[in-house]
Amino acid sequence: MTAARVDDKDTWDTFIDESPSGLLFHKWDYLHLTAKHTGSTLLPYAVYKGGEPICVFPLFYRRIRGISTVFSPPPLTVIPHLGCVMSRSFEELKQSKKESTLQMVAEDIGGVVEDLSPNYLSIAFVPEFNDIRHYLWGRCDARVRYTYTINLEQPLEAIWSSLHYKLRNKLKKEAGAGLRLERANDVSTLHRLIADRYQDPSLDIPPIRRDYLKDLVLAYPDRIGVYTLYDAEDEVAGVVAAQEYKRFLLWLGTPRIESPHAGNEYLQWLLIQRAKTEGYPIFENMGANNPDLAFFKSRFNPDLVMYFEIEKKDVLGAFSGWAYLTFVKKLLMSTGRV
Image (cartoon, rainbow, N blue to C red):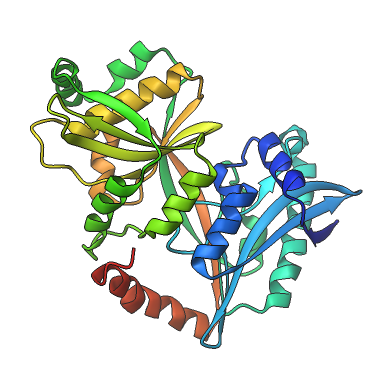
């Protein structure tokens, strides 16, 4: 096997489309916009066997003030997981073949990373990628992350009956309150509300720049939608951004808006129904890693799904990570540069 840079958008995006674990975050234009807005260099690698790609692996390289970093995904992007995407035929392999394939992928990408000599390496894998042993054997540290999913292939009645009873009572009340849902591509209201939320440094929520968010929506107008819930007086009761690609991902939300309505709850319930009607098999709701959000989201009775993040750093890398968490992130929030 060999690792090589991919320079063709169609080749890359076709691979992502065909792989069960490829996400919108992995698409060619999404990656390039992410590189642009984070000041990183995108390194779109594929690992080949017999001339056929068996894996694609986007890496982001950045060197700043003498410190080299490799991320997948980079920070400040609200991309929860990225890392490698295995080919559509990978799941058909026997276990021994899977393990030998993953070993060679880890070795080939490890060689790429070694040539870059980063002081800090961080990769968060998609939930479907659960065998990280080769990276642990390579002396990477690992942490477990979580996300919430709801299986939409079950009857809607089953989803409804599984909701917390207090939540069902709220939703019944809002069903007759004259609320309406609209989908658009304007990010102004959404970004203003989430930017206000980011000003609280105690919330472990990554900020996202307005121009980056706007560019993503413009690049994928059919795949990223801004959903706004209005009351009978045309006042905003809730607003979120969702990604609609293979699964319905509730991507960006706002804090509770001052309103007589349970806007966030009713908005999410409407989106669950919409996602099921449109045939998405999974409804994913980010935020399970945040204790301030987890209880609210858990009342929809989702499945708690694990994914893994690996990390490797030297002394300079450890200092840069500490400096980011201590100063840079708080500075961005306090100055409104989100």
